[in-house]
Length: 352
Image (cartoon, rainbow, N blue to C red; front, side, top):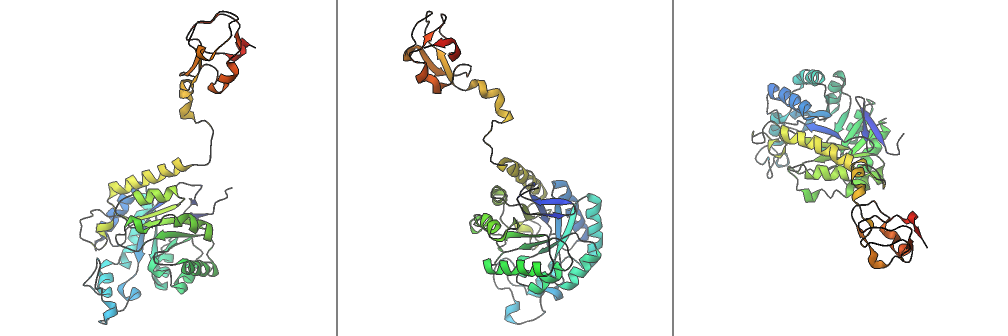
């Protein structure tokens, strides 16, 4: 049993008592190629990631085809496109999903998805998706969250742009819909996002405030922020992965390449092991060095019965003599037998 909240996805327990759960987000990094999508699944499995995640939408399920100004992207990474055109080019075609899920099963890596409307949930249920992720932009879509919750599957909600009240509302919707296993992710919905925007100190506050498994959806350009999040208690790390950061796709430029993602998996778990638990005991790696701590040694030859003075001994390495904290007690005692300089002080051989 543990005092920490935990959930389970495809048999893998997730929470502070377990190594961080690392999710490789494929997003649009297939760049329109099923073959590339399948290769990314293969690469994700090789990195040691726990799961690979996709996104399930079409342009028509996520936005409207409209010439109105509010449907045009005027600044940022995707400026000059309409929302409809962006999502039409970036989506993972639904007819690919079955083959991608099967490939993940063959490679022994868990796959699930972010659905963006109820029809996407229905498709993913047919494919036996073991969990669901709510994207940050959909965290305010409470009906969608309730619909996902009705599947009874574990749910992860990303919280980019959401304030504390909105996060609370999303959690309440998930619970009202029947979700029993729920996690939330700290996220900054910038692409890329500067590390300074993350304010990772919020993660322990989220854990205390909401009492849920908490993690990080990381859009920074290296692994530093993710590793720091693990040190602060993050149990889930999600990050984009691509075959080639210079591939020209909509998400390539802020994604990790496979060798970097493998480093993330290794470093995140190493950081979790390093955090460990409160423990002041001596560690196994220290045992061979205990003898090199300081202790008291005679620095002069003394005859039997001589009274020990302060200048007769010193605190030096190694640690085979009396502890240095006993120095005041030893001054004024007598040696039982003659001793040579360089002999460790053994307090049980002294007399008052």
